[in-house]
Amino acid sequence: MLNTLSGRFLILTTLFVMLAEVLIFVPSVARFREDYLRTRLERAQIASLVLLADDMIAPELEAELLENAEVYNVVLRRDEVRELMLSSPMPAAVDKSFDLRSATPISLVRDAMARLFSPEPEVIRVIGDPVRAGGLVIEITMMTGKLRSAMIDYGLNILYLSAVISVITAGLLFLAVQRLMVRPIKAVVSNMKDYAADPEDARRIIQPETRVTELREAELALRSLQTDLTGALKQKERLAQLGGAVARISHDLRNILTTAQLFADRMETSEDPTVKRIGPKLVNSIHRAVSLCENTLAFGKAEEAAPTMSRVALAELAADILDSERLSAGDHDISFAEDIPTGLTLRADAEQLYRVLSNLVRNARQAIETSGKPGEIAVQAAETADDWLIRVVDTGPGLPVTTQEHLFQPFSGTSRKGGSGLGLAIAAELARGHGGTLVLEHTGPKGTTFLLTLPKEVAHAE
Image 1 (cartoon, rainbow, N blue to C red):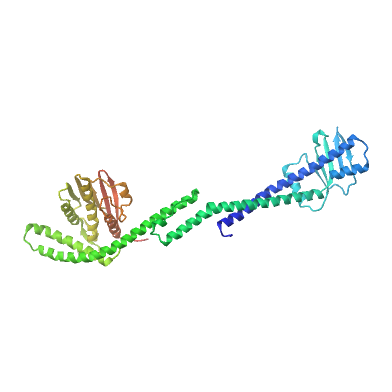
Image 2 (image 1 turned 180 degrees about the horizontal axis):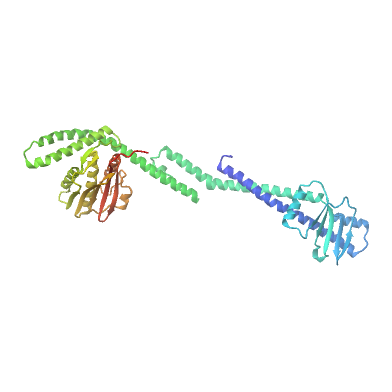
């Protein structure tokens, strides 16, 4: 009970209500004491009126009047004359005097608390204003025993009432907290447990229901998290299935390509000029395909093999890529160009660099073909003291905003119908394997530019 949210609210509410009642109790008791003393002054004044009507009254009547007023004597000042109106024997000397005419709230509270915690009865003098202009000043003497008893009774009534109010208030708050907070929180916890049992089941994603603003924000945040996680898990499952499928396909494809490579090797001995020109390129393409299949089989998971670094003549590599894409372009009005400094050699894995640039150039060609307009594609290169910079620039229609948001994510970074969305994800991973980066530098209606940055030196952690 004490460890629950509603239980703690119940206890705290009871304590706070009791504290509030205590703060009310003190001035209430002080006001009760003041009213009690003023009532005695009024009774004493009424008793003194009998003497004003008849100068001589029997001692028995005088004693009865003083007893009813609960005072020992009454002094009334009228017309600047101070008269002892009623009197009886005093049990003791006057201990204290209290002038209600000049009493302040602080002094009333102080005197009330002093009386409440002083068990010994005392004789006190009380001074006040007569009611209905019955004189200038009225004074009485009285014992404090009955006053203190009445104050205790009044205080106990307040405490009893405070306890009842505290219990009722705490109970109502307990029920309110149970309904407005604890129940929605338990529902969220229950949903989290249910979702954890099968996070790939989209039906288990929470549906926000509460109207409490803070709890609804928590439910919305949880729904967003669960939606993203479910999507990531499904994508991971698809990637795993794809990896298994690719491995099986690569096994058979490698055998087919190995046979094709044997025939391509024999083509190199042909005397036909066209065969001599195309043969080496065909051999290189088949060799790359075989190498890719072997890497897939050897790797067998969704990561790329570590690059094997060597010196790569970028101009030759780019020429091979552009020649292949030029053939693929067919009758489309697309021009290909390279702007690479003569003799530029960089340190990279030739096969992986070929795949990166080939992906970028192929995407550019397909985008221009889809637009149905003429276009240009260029591979540009430069170097700084620390990096090699390679840009693939096209004059295509640019990338949609929705595609840009998930450009390098598998199955997400494509706007072309039928595209797998894997090309740029693979290219970015290969770039990271070289310690470099692949970024979208610019895109718009006038074209797109991708920037591949490859560092010259290995970065060491400090």
